Length: 208
Length: 368
Image (cartoon, rainbow over all chains, first blue to last red; front, side, top):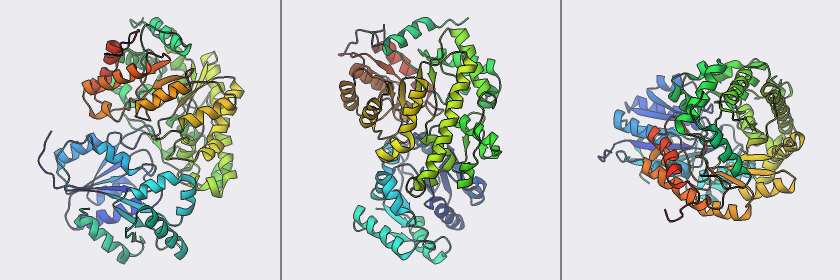
């Protein structure tokens, strides 16, 4: 296996189904494309992602679909082999993984323990939290949502244009409980100014 | 005529289920479509539209891996159940085919609205393809191998809910529980139709139910919610059909002990459990001590661990550890879980059978 350093930065996007991961990734992809950064996007093809992959390709993303027939096991299936192929063959600047909405980040990180290709320049988990549904999701799928927040390096509170002040405050309170000293990013897809600092941070890399 | 000793294989499986000691630990794979396609050199759709070819592919694949059981590709209530629903509800465009991979339906679009649920039509499985082809193939496999298809493989209920309703289902648990139960009832009705179709087209009743208990996972629903929207329907089916249960759960943190205890309390006969998690074998040894009458299919042989990323030696070692830990007490079948897939190197898949041959003969050499 190659042991030379890769310049690729790995960004793992986590968050419950419908939290806004794909929207954020598209915005990030636009920014990376504008900067001329080569980017590979790894996505499950189990039907979750609601965006036409041609849209991704139009944004210069090299889209890799990882197949998995079972919705329970889709988390890590094929991921490591896919990363070996991407890093070994394409040498991208960024690799973005959109995790299943039902995945906990640690599962992906554990799968990455089997990755023996060139090391990543940075490897970070970005968890997207939808404040409009957070309270009910804590009630129904608490362990999953808590794990997604607790295991993140960066936390994004999405749907700032749809959430009430109370919903955002609740999200911030829960994030502080689960991940003390974390400053979550508050974004709204319709408000470029809320996205710009986050995208700049993701595009220039997080070395946490 | 097949050269594989299906009679010996069948005897092995029956002995294990009866709590007797076979000549060796049986072994079987759950295979994704792409593996069968790779072995026989055909596309998914080529196989699913030709019962004879599908039956031949099932036997050829099982013999290639040296399995003690033979399963017909797709004959469980997974994506093809979604296809059947999509067809009768005029939403076939939501279904996506691949030549050499498992097809899927767009998540959450079949039942995006409350009206979609209320108007959801149940497929007639005896008529809607690919089910008739799947059952015809299963019958041909029986005729060729002499191995009777003993299981009925429904999907009650959460994996179907997940496919049909998507993320909204998790909100429904609190906000629209009545609506969600309405969907559960329709899925139950559909699975019973599937059961009756299997009985009719196969010409005999199965002897057990193999259900994918998708909700009973600690990173999924809380236990009582999982019971309300999934568990109670499993109990109902077991009672209505009079069949015992084999539980498949490939989640990362299954509620094994709580679920089995509750099912037994409800009067369900639990024959076997099948899962890859926990990966800690000691926990499976504890499970065995708690439920000595329940067979274990597995146990901690995870298709996305050594089988995907390790060497054949790693795979053999993992299988050996499982055999040594669970084989001596019997009622154990080596079954990598969940479904072996395209990215599992062929040499690693073949190493499973090789390990069973090396370490699986009774009496088990625990010092091996």
